[in-house]
Image (cartoon, rainbow, N blue to C red; front, side):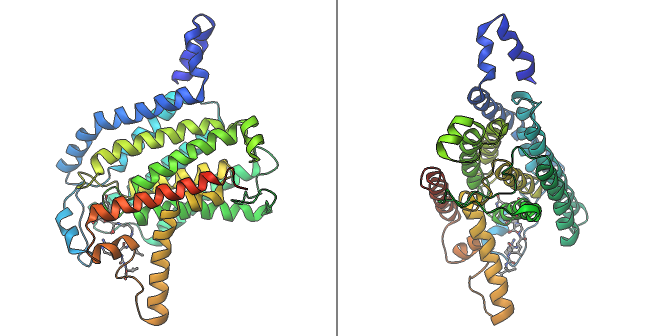
Length: 358
Ligand code: 57M
């Protein structure tokens, strides 16, 4: 909105030219998201506490987690607000991709909110079947739209990290693939969200990486130089990714150990879905598995644990997801968190290197 209101003034005052630049708007969208989080965070946490929106901790988990009982959850509401408002303020709202990522964010936010609400008020969340069906439904709508209204002829092709001349074309199979990317990412983030700041840290790091990727993919000359697919209009997603970094940092302020608030599914599902959608639009779906490799590791640990228990009757990890394994091995919670962040930074650096190493 600010873009539409203020940029036209450049004809009279040249200073307003800055509103044309994606980099300028990204920086201010990020700062707006941070400011909103700092201003609204304490108020929201207080409201959630008064409304008794507190977490019930399961007994089978690491004992230290019992101390967290009553910590307000649904802090994802703060993330949603800090994501949506700055995006509306600083983006070019005639860009269709901005609306696609906003649709993903809001719809998955509603699914997460409904689940958290039911968990709190009825003591039982949505059934797994209903939760997955809703996720698949929204992801299918997004995937079908992107497939049938493509930016270019490369839509069903995949960019393979480290390889420049191998771009498999999935044809119509791209639709279920894209659904898998969105649903997989949102559940990967959800599974990772089990220690203070553990999910939001790698999410910020991944959003930073995709901030760069969106900018490059949307810029014809840079995309051409790096030999990546140029997606006209994807550059505007730099602002959305910047907002995700700002909203994430703002939330981390309150979620840092010892957490004053948890994000709940209200936060983890929309963040994961938004990241997956950005990866699809920018045609870096496979790279997301490296950028967000920590979410993949957490998900794999659960799959391995469940398969091993069913097939061999034995566990591989003390407890899955893998962060609980290290907790039970005696690592202090902040140590697990910071080490997992470090792994996430390494993975983001490796993935950015693939832009040149091919
Ligand atoms: C969400 N939720 C946290 C909080 C957060 C199949 C199975 C592996 C599923 C998995 C599961 O249910 N995962 C989904 C994990 C929970 O956090 C809430 O949930 C929201 C995210 N959806 O925002 O509202 C707890 O995590 C802790 N927490 C923090 N700080 C944070 O910032 O400390 C969360 C955010 C919170 C708090 O204690 O209550 C969760 O872990 O439940 N299930 C599991 O993860 C369980 N693992 C398990 O059963 N493993 C088995 C099998 C099935 C693989 C095994 O290894 O044998 C663990 N969950 C818990 N305790 N709570 C087991 C131990």
